Image (cartoon, rainbow, N blue to C red; front, top):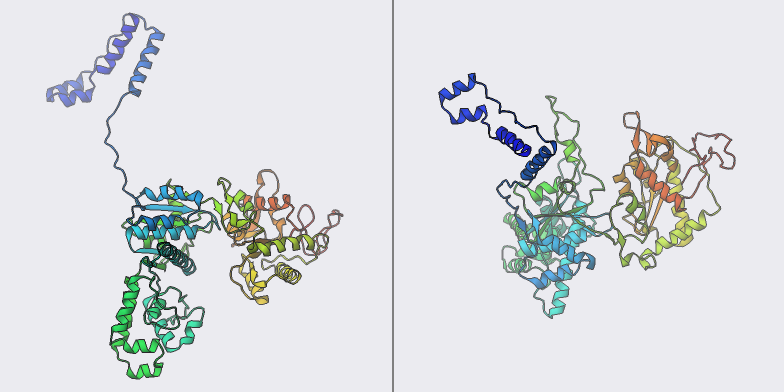
Length: 616
């Protein structure tokens, strides 16, 4: 009976009309009565309320509300793109066969169902991001047609274009050999620069063929700035092949059909006869000028535009590659990169216009890459796990400090006994022999230019080359500071990317590690080498705040001359791993304490770390 009273009380409260309900359902007279007559409270139960029964009733209500199904309109599913929906499945399968076996199935699943046609590929340095992106681009082209490839720098664009060209050539060659015919042709790839530069380069090379032998032809500009131009796969390169210039390889049957058709058109055109004769050196440039008409330049421009229109891939550098490729219409896009390396460079941060307003009001947003934005937004990402470039073990420190959550392994091509890593093997043996019982003494400096560290690095490289017979071309010296770069360039030529990298940190105890303590910059420095890495620097600067709450932080001087404390856990961890693995050579500088006599004070300019010695 008590339970029934409880239910009646609850039902009474639930069914009692509220003032706004009376106003909604009633007329004007009822609304007037509502404002003057208070709502009568329900009568209290005649029996005392039983507490267990009230609990049971409350639980029943909660269960009812939990099981209550409120109908809601279904969400619309975002459109997806199946990049594998290609008619020529043999061609598609051969492209995918070039992917690592452990990535093959994952990549197919990733490309088969891409929401909004957006794909993301991430990996550290040396994992083959550019090569995988090139294969994905070939798949996209087979599905969609002409593809635009872009990157923030000309060097990155050239590298990407060369990978696409290499892969499409490999696919065409292997499939034609398998079929026994030449039906499959290369995909047409053009690296784009300003059309003005292309026309100038083309005419300059025809006028003086020796120009084509240069590494890069330099266009003329109004402001004296030298824009970067490279002949490889450019419009000029294809124009020279179309007009049968002996400076380039002739077009072959497996080349793109559109280029072959364009070549045949030039061969049959009477208006382009002079251009053909000049390109094939039947006449010299003076004869060409004597017979040339004003219309010939317009024909060259038209040929250049025809080359661009015939391309399957257009690769070009731009300031905002994602905006150019993705645009405002959400084009299908596959991007690759590493959010844990250098972020985008924002040149305009604090500048204001004449009215005092910031010119760039989104400077902080600009420091976040588009890839990082989508990744942090929860977008599906294809992550690569196999190191393909570095010698086995060389990536271990970076893997632990920068990518601790990724299951990283080495490919078979990273075995240290392979001939490509011979320089690294010689380097390790040289270091073990050289620094066993032969400490060097050099003066300590407080300048970021750290000339003594540069001398140490160059002397080390010289001794290594002379002792082991290693080719100097296999070694590259890097420095994070411009002052050190100038010192290095004064003493040696600047080589291209090499197998062994010597990094001159250029920081010491007095000035601290500077921006090399930033994990992304440190990641770039530590991943440039292929078979061997040598770091020259004063690692004592990572121990300025060694214990307590300040552990993992370092006091440094910022650009304003103020001393600030920054986090440097990554740099500290790298140093500790090197020390624990016995890969730190101890060098005592003049003015440093001898660890055998720690009570003695240094007599020079140097300030030593807590152990009384400086590290190399």
